[in-house]
Image (cartoon, rainbow, N blue to C red; front, side):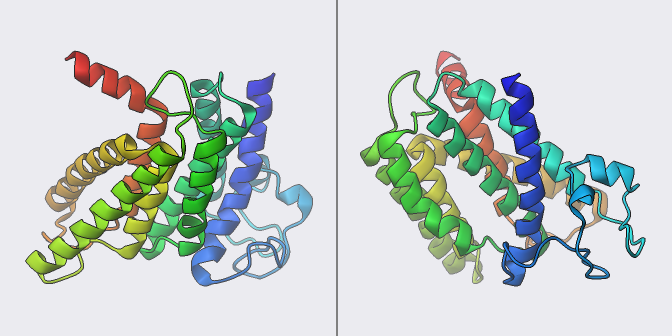
Length: 261
């Protein structure tokens, strides 16, 4: 029963994430006005705002103007719900506050993923508050995702902030010196500082490795299949978001496998 309730909760939060993904990069309030059609501007009725179900009942169209709605809306709702289930399963023995913190972290990564895909920016409104919040939570409720027992702790969290932000800041400086252009955005630096604060320096290493590997595979594939030019700018935030989720959910298992082999 708890997994069903968490799935519903995740879907509802996913509906709110759709609002954040659309409004945050446009500098709009995520509170007011209420949800409305981006085509005709008419408010969405409460019974047309039920996650996934309303989209299916409306056949993917606005009730007022008939404009087709993006399939992304129900997909994000479903994806967030599934992420919450996976997080709950992974941290089932952790405190409820820790689980809720990881829910929020997973949702933040989801928002970062889609905003960076659309606008090639990572909003400071997500990462900057996330850094001190991570330090506070690591000191009180967050477990070390790479250990079987114990809190992450303030020192490990601070080291993670410095490792994540410092490494990517150094990469940005060296990249600009070598390639004569920005190789790493400021948003990536602040995002990795937040990731390190939530999970520690080990997560910084694993997240960076996973993101680089995934980005390289997809980048080369797009060059070969779609003819994208070498050196074309691609957002790195989505890969970092996936890498951070991998670190949070399976980092301990990956580390154990690595050292045993």
